[in-house]
Image (cartoon, rainbow, N blue to C red; front, side, top):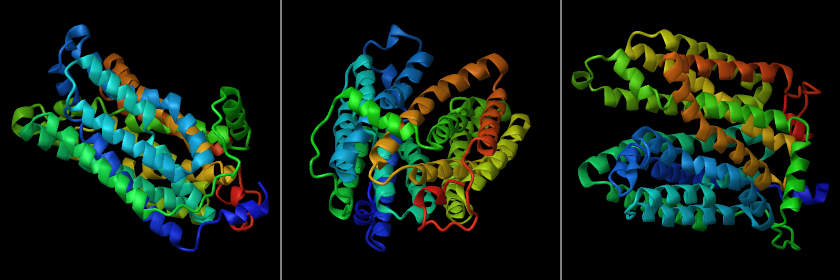
Length: 428
């Protein structure tokens, strides 16, 4: 890409902040709506015809893991189309498709149809990847850590609030209304992006639909050959495992800490454990992402990985629910830096104009790990005990610390200014 082309794609002064705010708000509405169904989804599928073809535990795992596992296969494709036709269009496509699919889930009659629609959701949407590509293409490279950290606020605020709303709606109005409410939230997010975002990225004029798998694979291989990119994708893969390993065991572990579950309200505490982590991850993403803009993403990643590892280890030995909440909050804050830093590095290690493909691949890697982590965490806990899941999370962060120290490219000039070399500026 020539300098002239790059300069033409630089975002308008301060306009990128408006785009960032709108997309982050829309992201919160989308993730809040989609995660709204998590608390009752395993119960909902048990009420449908044909739900007895496998055990309730495996059925619950299948219906929850279907979207991210399917998304792992398809998000690179949608990311490639985003580079060809525009990132805003891909956001609109992803959100509107989710509106239809999630609305239909509230009216299914068989367990198989619900699983099919969940898989279709993963196949057709890719909202987070589309939003990330849109923000990465619009904001200045030297503010990438702040921008992607702010986008994490939208993601995790939705994840923290959505399940609470969904549980209340399902308990009081049945399983159908939450899906309708989710579709409404997504539709409002669709309108927000459609009328609120003015994209500055202009796709190549000679763009034509190219579905040749060989051509797409060639483009992806070109991205993977860039210095540091494969290393960052490995960090993103491990981060998915580290973040989601304890999700399936958290409610069960609360029962261990609170033997009198019925009297002490352990269900509320279990939700609080995950909510505390989501809130502190959000704070850490913005705070540590901004520090990455100033001091370098590599050093923030190393420090955050070390902190997360040290705060996860003692969670395996807690004897009180409040100890767990406190340590989860600290670990979540450090995990925010682990999330924001690699995402910003990708933008600085790759070329402008490739954000759709870059973050499509990133979403594929993250979706696969997000889908496998709960299953892996459950297996580890079943073999070695519930407390071992926290040790496993610490081990994942320890591996990320090792990779950050030994394999991430280091800055070639400590006084390097981001505007002079956008690829190197955030890659230290």
